Image 1 (tube, one colour):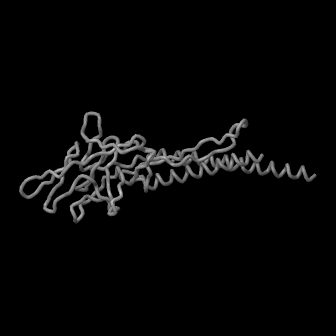
Image 2: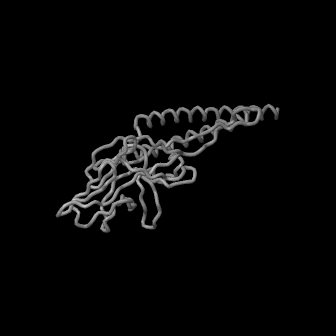
Image 3: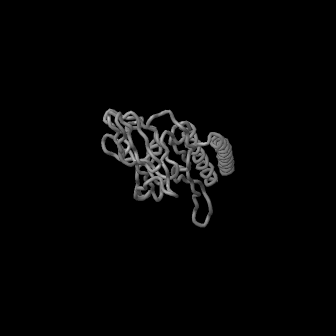
Length: 242
């Protein structure tokens, strides 16, 4: 009976974690470049006795491609295919993102809303327009012609699901994810950069709502299991006293 109570209680905890993750996915469904996540679990097994409960393995980001949509921003980028853009903060920390919503800063760098700077391009002050080709080559239109600004690279990881996420749009390298590999976009089978577009979140609102309903029902079923195990313990205690 104690085992039944533990199994049901860990099941409730697992479904609560699932609800928290799905709720966070829904809250960020309109954030460009956001990657939804899923909670991973495993069965707890006692030697020679079978399953006794559920244990959490952690939250894992899902890197399926989001839809690409035209944007009104003059410096927006989207990745069509796998990989990340590399960005740096004011302290020099390196992170990776698929959120390509950038704006030109006073120093000529392209920065996102949190102030992270895009690697590989610097826009001159007299530039009136920026363009980025599918292979990452950036150029600026000036008053008297054009100027090449550099090349924006895409970075991939052997195990991107092992990256450390921050906020759903920033990811940090870890030993488990492997070393970042720089790729030149625009190849036949490789990723491409799409200038003037943003990648939408890969969260499906319909699927998320279905996941919430399934988790709620599973939570209720486990709660009934806790109640049943508690009642059985109460009856057993009364029998021992009698």
